[in-house]
Image (cartoon, rainbow, N blue to C red):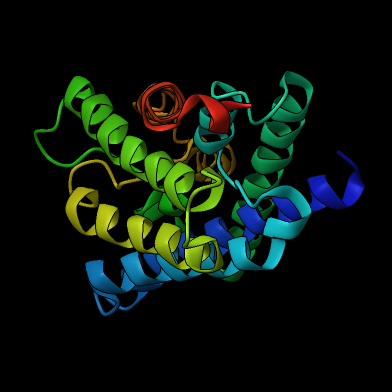
Length: 227
């Protein structure tokens, strides 16, 4: 692990929050003109393109849940995992600060700087359950396309991962905001000061990521591929 490694994680996560969160703010500014599909596409393209750009530098995890999902499967050591998560959170905070400068205070306040939030009538426990499922699917696809040495799809892994982000948001956007990523929630929450139900966006994604990492590395991989 070196400086380019950490910068890759920081810049990649910055892009996800800046583009993804920016699409939420733009949707508010244009009174729904972007829509859920547009928001989902913005997040999916941002993560997919940045993974393609930085995967050769850091693996392009850009998400503490992905980092932990690889850590529990033995693909990332503890020191690297901690350093990556710090870089990811820093990138998220920097992106949120930039969005606060760009958008009007009225738009920022209306959606709490694109901080993910639970839908009407959604309890925190349902939120955790939903985020865990969405994040499990994300980390499972990361393992299946980018990590598993038997995969024939490494060249398009970034596209596949971006696609998961897209379809997860289409289903979960109205339930939890479909963060699937503690950094996606942390950056906007810190800058906006909106911490409501914030633990949902750590517990759910980290639980889903850890379960996916354990399942894929222990069940889906053969003994020879676990090394």
